[in-house]
Length: 356
Image (cartoon, rainbow, N blue to C red; front, side, top):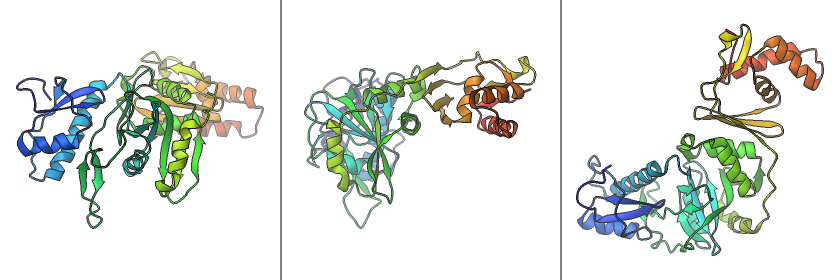
């Protein structure tokens, strides 16, 4: 990408970032229509590189352009915001409902239906800053227009689909994780530890934020918790999703922050026979669960795993760890075996270093 040379004919506002698209002629007219909600007169901060985009298929070309614009906006905001693989809509008061899920979870379909009642912000990429402001990405939606060609998706403007316009500004208000399957249990509250683990898998550049796990925990708390929608057909749950904006949020659970260790974790070789923690990026401890991020991976520990990880604030031997567990939970005839199995599993998962 480059911001040099002749100003591009088409500039769109993506996540608050003016992105130039170097096209002309019919392609420029077509893309202006598709990006009708995002066109801006602001000078491009960056221009997507389409030199390697070798296709004469307009549908494939336009889809690739959308992907490159989105990636450019994500790159420009990395380390500044929580960027989610999520769709978003907002009511007239600016209260945003965000639906999060992987490809195939039904985000675009859900947003397309919700945006006939609430304003369209984005169907697949939502960017939230530290004030919970949602930065719109009113990109074209990829829609199947021919039931006989289900793999062919056309890029359609939200105006072509008659989606409602959002208010001038929106703030994250409710979070829903989409669980598409054969069940129809509807909206269910999610424990924060599980919600964080699911959301991490649907983020972009989260690790570039300071204290990424705590940032997600703060966001969930500010939204009154997170919900999951277990559904087979989202049409059946539109009323519930819209009504969720008025449902009272849940109070935050007590938690403790364990900031990342950097390079300061003691090596097991310095304390012969001792187990140590692997350096971690961030962690949040709830009453009975601990969300631990190592590199970009997140693990949710419970029960004995939490006890052992917390006990290893300093290097300890297996015997000392067994004693710590029995002091907390009482004597158990299989304590040595249970602790040993848990330690080996945590080492296999890359959470602990075994004794040197």
